[in-house]
Image 1 (cartoon, protein in one colour):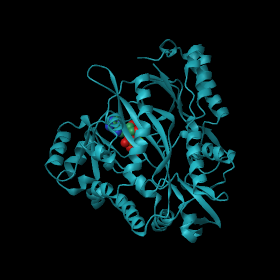
Image 2 (cartoon, rainbow, N blue to C red):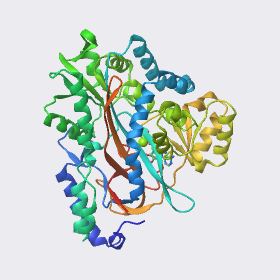
Image 3 (cartoon, rainbow, N blue to C red):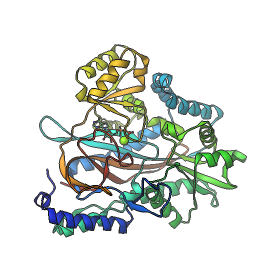
Image 4 (cartoon, rainbow, N blue to C red):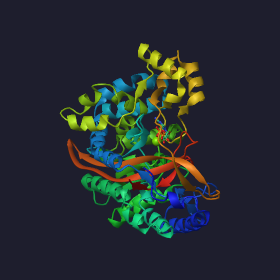
Length: 474
Ligand code: ADP
Ligand code: MG
């Protein structure tokens, strides 16, 4: 189903006017990013890239994605507590993937010592595309679940007035009034605030662990502001600061520069390039501490592609969520075909199928952040090369999702305005807090729609491929 602005899509003067309004509205509303040239200074900033128009999203699929989010929260939390499952599932991967292996070593070490942490906070984002079936009907298919540093809750909470303005300028006031409110930034902050409160030291701070390059700082500031508004102190530090100035006190309480830290919110630490030897040591220190890590290392491991693939095996969900048949059914209904490349006949068979028909699949390593997956001819060549080697087990194979493209304008600084055929990815944010064995919060506080031109197989907003969008339910 198309969005109701087909009639103005090719009206160039109207579109030009709307685009100028849109950009200024984005700047006014704080939909901002630092520039590539000056990623660590706010003297010069620009708008974060976004679509001129909302993209049509089937209402039923949107509702389905929200309805399954609390189930996914429970599932991720259950996996993070299941040492045996993580060990078994990641056994083949950690033999060939050093990054996952290092995370796993810290996980094991922390468990051996015994957890000092008793309050757990999960913030994730489950991403979906709308697959087009043979009958033309669209189906919700999970792309992945991000259990660490899932971004854009902040900026996307500021886009509603921008889209409302654009639609009004284009004479679509009625449609403007149908756009959905969306404030995941607040939902994330409520989770962090709850974890902070349960930690139980009113003078303790929340620490955002941030990367060296901080182009997306405004996204994080949105969540920070919500915490300051609740009188919770926020500090921003890097791994190297933790290495230099972090220490554990009595009961393995974490101190930074002498201040006790109640919650560590990672916006860093999800890719190998985030780590050197010192940073790994800092990570270990944080994981050993009593502070609430969002996520703890087990939850980060629960978000690996290998775990995602293992979840699709018959019986796995049932064993992880015993007695929750309805949740299991809702979760399973979102899965695309996922295949293990572990050594053995099953892996041999699917590797051969993918080499023969690469356009049916995506080949995924255990990496985050976009731009790592392999498609088409490249997939075929790589798989051909590694098909008889254990190296193949660092990847998984997934059915390629083929959504119906729709025309839109992608607004990006310094780029010409032109109509592109686009596809979208819907993310639902999940937030949960557990104290000991008791779940005390489990929410799905908002969504993120990202859209890219069809010619790009891979990549998110931070990778410079996708842009922010907002759903128009049809
Ligand atoms: P990352 O952890 O790098 O974000 P993803 O699994 O989300 O890895 O893949 C990155 C991008 O690649 C997605 O945002 C999506 O655009 C594309 N992609 C991933 N899996 C599929 C798939 N099965 N079918 C089609 N496109 C996919
Ligand atoms: Mg992704």
